[in-house]
Structure formats: structure tokens, C-alpha cells
Image (tube, rainbow, N blue to C red; front, side):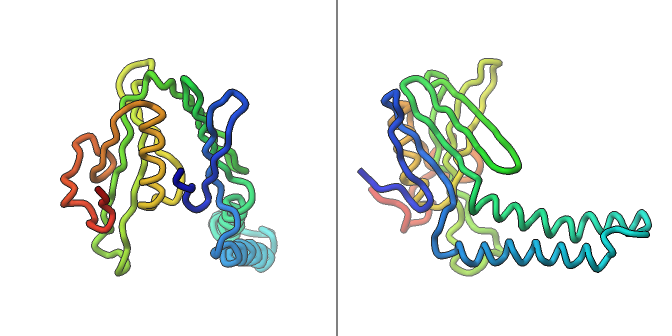
Length: 205
């Protein structure tokens, strides 16, 4: 069994299914991100004090107060949320995938019956022309399905959007759902790409 990539873990459910959990905890970047979060919050508080906590501000001053010090504090709280609270769970039971996102800022839940799933895609987005040298681009894993109300739907899996993650998640989900697995470019890989056009180091026969 291939071990999960960074920040992922697998758990068995009481019903005999499997739960995939993605949560950023620890790792080499933890201290850097924690320092960034605290610095943003401290800068926001300092800015609010410098502005007198909003006393005697004009309308333009209040807009600046909300956007700058308030925005810095909010950004810091968001980073802390990612580090300590945000968690995404995908429960794969016999007949359904149950996706739940829990964080300080939101709670979201999506349930898709396995019979409604039409395919799983590994969609590759090449780096932009102004990207840093050595940028490998990003990979997204998409679960495509037919909603009850008609049309088509797509569930984008959470994560680091790395090639390693895509290679782990894509086959796992396609095997569970018993649907085809496609690889291609962009937001939709409905037309499977020529393997020669994808990053050569990422192609394994």
C-alpha cells in the first residue's frame, strides 16, 4: 500500500469504509508560517493603535482602518486556522463519498453517491510564463459526477496540488468509484492528454 503524501492520513471507519484526512500539521514550514501569522496579527494591532483604534477618523480613514490593520489581523488568523484548525475529510463508504471541510471561517459538506460519479481526472496546469525557475506546475484531482438536478458537477480535492498527491489520490478514488481515470491539461481533462505532452519526469508506465 502506497503511503499517503505529506499532510494526508488514512483511517478506517466503523462502517468498514475509509476516511482520507488532509490537515496541515507540523512539517518544516510550520515555524515559518506560525511566525508569519503572529507578525501579521502584531502588525495589525500596532496599526490599529497607531490610528487611535478608529477615534476621530473620517470615512476614508475608517476604510483604511478596516482594510489595512483589519486585513493584517484577518490574514494572520487565516494562517493560524490553516495550521491548527482547518481540516478536510473525505469518507469513502460503500455507496457515497462524504466531503467535509471544517475551519474557523466555514463549515462545508458535499455528499456524492458513487453511482453518480462518472470519472476521476488528474488535471495538470503548467507554470505560467512569469513563474519562478523550476516551478513544476500544479496538479488537481477532480471527481466528476452527475447531480440529481441534471448537468455535470466536479468536486476538486483539497491538498497541496502536487504531482505526488495526484498520483496517490487519483488511482485510489478511481478504484473506489470504479470509474475511468484520465490525465490531461487545465481545469478539465475530459480529453486525455498525450503522455508525451505531460512533464516527462511525472510519467511512469
